[in-house]
Length: 131
Image (tube, rainbow, N blue to C red; front, side):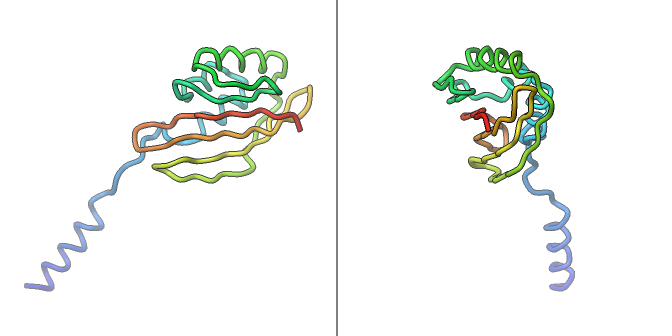
């Protein structure tokens, strides 16, 4: 009887899924938004306020202000590609990503800091620094 109980316990432990991560809580849509130069798609992931440094234009911005700054940046520096070169993911905590954004005007190092939990993925810091 104890063996049956043990087998049933193990089966239930394996069969019951753990917490499921929110499908929106990953970096891929952010990468796509930067790669396509879409400030509106990127702004969907901004926190209510965001610390930004976009090619020397530095400050704390509201979500809407940050979108306008990025729209201007993408207009002046159309995308020729974006690739992540470093990821330090800590689901349920703070994560950092570093990428390289290419345009006709040159390359930019992109530093993305996000807060993550099971129901939110929010960018709280974003830097585009000319390489």
